[in-house]
Length: 238
Image 1 (cartoon, one colour):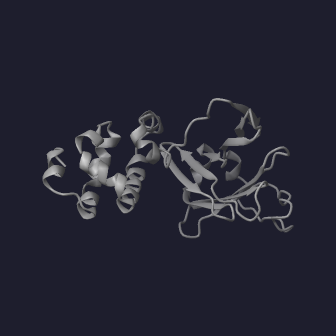
Image 2: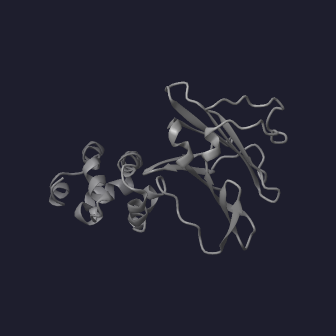
Image 3: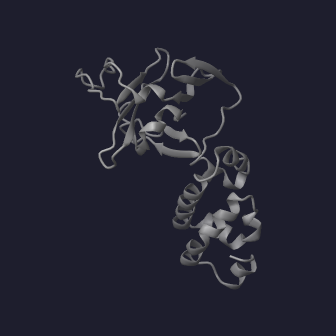
């Protein structure tokens, strides 16, 4: 990609679009106005779901190499808002009030009194914890076995519309790595706990996942020694 004339002289199809997306995203992440420099590519991305999906994957891949502070600044631009939400979640909204938690902090919508977001620190997940009581109606009564690389946190505020379990276990696929299993129960739903957005951050890295119908998500390949520095942002659905 050298100029916007390239796209006007050569009709854009999916193959041509996707072969240029690496350069397109690189320029976009460096603050260039690519929608003005390469309008045909930008228009094609707006009208082609297949290429849009490839764009999001490329944006996540390159974006996770940049510092979070730079991504947050970039995220103020409306034309990359959708891609940014896959890397760095939005800040608390006006009208949300903070609530302290033992594991971090939460935000509640002052008008509806609903819990909206939780910021959770994970330092205790890197060391053994005593078995905790099971969540009523969801978990078995058998204690979860713990090891030096396992830990469990239960978060179930009495007045909240959710229950949350975090569990760290060894990653069977990678030695000296672990995986974080998250299970969310939405009390105001029955049988479908999908749509909870979970963003795991440490250092300059970020991973975003969304719960399935069972309310479950697994982050794999995590470095054990960095668990104390990790934070999890939980964004609850409307």
